Image 1 (cartoon, rainbow, N blue to C red):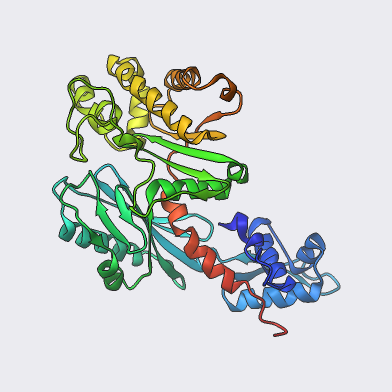
Image 2 (cartoon, rainbow, N blue to C red; image 1 turned 120 degrees about the vertical axis):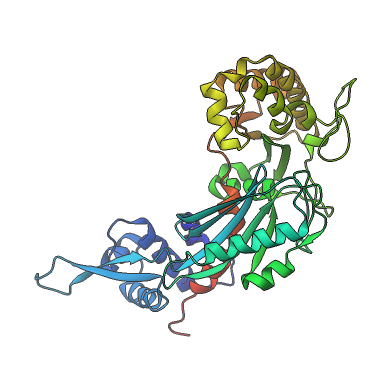
Amino acid sequence: MLSNIENIHRISKYRIKDREKASIFQYICSQPSPTRKKAAADLKIRPTTVSKSVQELIQDSLVYEGEVRNPGKQGRPEIFLYPNLDRYTAIALYVVSLEIKGALINLGEDILAEKTITLTAGADNQVLTRKISSLIHHLDLKKPAGSEILGTGVSLPGTVNLPTRTWISSCRWPLLRNLSFDAIEEKSAHKLSVHKFLDTELEFLLIKNPGYRQGGTILFHWGYGIGSAYANMGRVLRSTLGRFGEIGHWKVDDPFPRKCTCGLTGCLETKAALWALLPEIRKSYPNTPEDENEFQNFFQENGLERLPLMDKALEPIILALSNLYKIFFPDRILIISPFTNSKSIFARLKEGLLDNIPDFARETVSLVNLNQGFQGEIFGSTYSLFHNTLKNALIARWGN
């Protein structure tokens, strides 16, 4: 969040002093020991503008004064300035396997508190509503003194109607049907911002990596489930049905179709998703975790890439990713997967992809393994809450 503050007033209707105030705040956030004098010199902004902007930031509790620099010396004393990163906080909710996780974060993208609830596959709307509400309430109690919680960002798998904020369905919880977040918002007294989880992840990657906004970008997830998201020139594409890039539920050539969690048969997930591979893996490794982060370490520590089932899983993954490429012809494919952190798996996936796309495209597409796991589920789902609040807070009031 903090890395984008100086551009928060890029729209032409904002004044120069608004943009300068934003630059001053970002400077205070990014420098080790800033002062008013140093900010004016480094940013080449008039000292009067810096002083008035800093005074407003202090009044709004976004900045506080610290110790005096060079005390006892002649001239006007310089006072160190520090950002109050806990002035605004937000709650992020996201799903991992059959768990709903929550995190309380601040302006500096620091995680201040976390909480996880585990549900069974038989959880219905009533159970999910109660558990989600209790999770928000628990994290609400963890906010620092003087902090304002801006709202809750919710990142969801499955089918999500974004305009109505309705979680239509998820294969993880078959009894879930048309869960509205209106009642949860009313009970929690917090604004809820609802998102599709891969869209949120891709949007966060676009914010953090401006180069990804050029041309086309595919985000491919191969983990507990399988899915994708696509952005063209920095804009994430969506559908009105709440589904997009459902590569995991493409039909694959399977003479003995297995029923998928979506209710259909012969889906890619039935051959390669973690949920489908786990029963076979656990025959040899009973303690194999289903949490993707835990599984990633377990997978590498135990050399599971050598299992014959990985050869069988990799083949349809390569075919599906190759076909996905031929739909969009992107400039880059970003991969998040507990499987591809194995160098041999990633190398075979890359080789298989390049072998199955046209010759002229092989030199133009890059395949990037994002081994940091998901971050957008926390920071992407709450980004707009912080951004919109700071956009108003960083408008200069002096001289109006």
